[in-house]
Image 1 (spheres, rainbow, N blue to C red):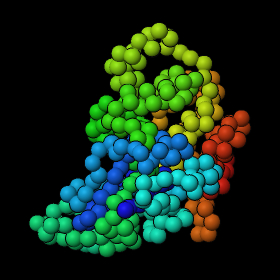
Image 2: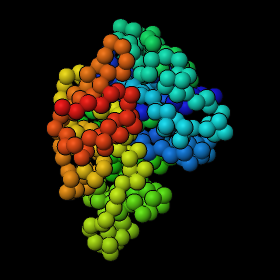
Image 3: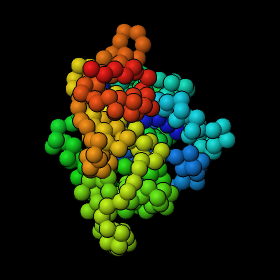
Image 4: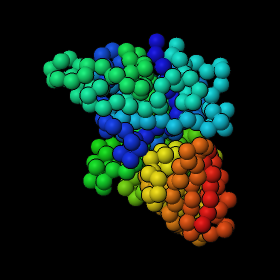
Length: 333
């Protein structure tokens, strides 16, 4: 059998990967549950049902390529909430960053001289390495079936590249529920409505206009929207806070030291960077505020995140949001 890899995933050119994309060695397969650029919504119930879950598409094998994604660990609180000893992983072994993932938390840590970038290298049709010779996941678990239960968000691309990533999703939106079709925004909306009926109107209103337009192609969602009006009273649920955290974490991780990152807050939601489905809703809140922050790394310890221009009323909210995804200290100036 294979391995289930659980954590927070993504790719940023600024994160230091020596290769942006890589090929898989012979016999290795990699099953994604979110499309490129999407955050993956994971709950305890969805993980409990993993062994009975259909894959959304065929796994990538040695004929394909993938972005060189990296992983961040679940926080101790997330691990306690999501993982239990009685879960059935369909005969696979669960791997957690910082616990039993026995390598660097990145698909490939090598360079073109040590690891394949082109699938034709695997067959010898193009000169180059035929296998991964690095400290990454594709080397340590070569020849195994790998299931990536993590986000595949992309940060730090230029506007044209990021736009191409989003266009390639077609009718998909910025997030996907584990087990649902990532390329169907309607499927995500119906899943959210079924699991969180009270929070669904606010979630819908928080999507970008383009994402709402995709969903309103569905006759049922269109009729629902017409019948309820266009505004709703809503407050973020724990599920919404977790959705936001799954986008915030790779953005924070991928930010270079002493480079300005963007934050905004409104209605107790803290958004770091872009790519959130809640941006419009946050910006409609009367307490909306924006600013920048920097990451200060340390030789020893986790370092700190320094926020600028944060009103006192929001400092506790921002501190809690960062502590949800990182061990770094939070400072304000």
